[in-house]
Length: 76
Image (tube, rainbow, N blue to C red; front, side, top):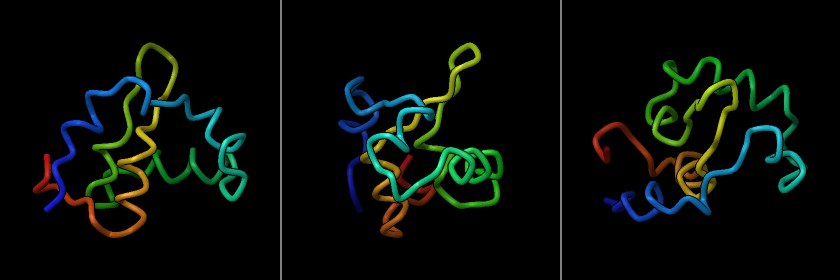
């Protein structure tokens, strides 16, 4: 099991949703928006997404763990 606390608490890991496609062009903004809109349907995905005010943020290391299938609800 991966300790995710260091990823969650490092502010440098949190990137605005609108910036992710610029950093990782394999994802489009609409893909990410749709994916995170349905985050409750995907186990563990809620852990790497936060909304502050009107802006959404993604923790990129946690998102990578989720893509690899290593992030689940028990790691919170």
